[in-house]
Image (cartoon, rainbow, N blue to C red; front, top):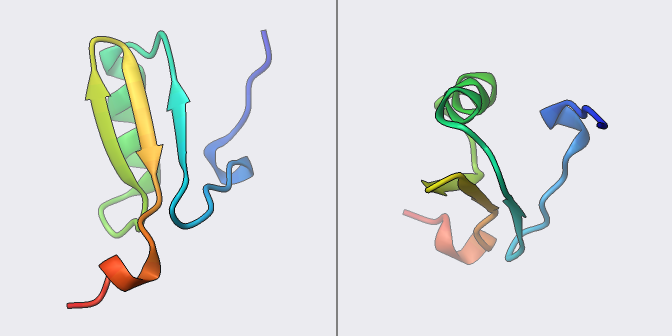
Length: 61
């Protein structure tokens, strides 16, 4: 098994990364590590975590 740190992961704007077999405790740890002021959007369902980086045009108020 390979272990990587979240800071090693780059998601380009408009792209996504999908991780399988993520348990709830791991998901909560990822949320805590990324913090509340992150640009990356996360979605979790039944052990699948999707990390998505919106395009800059979607980030304007």
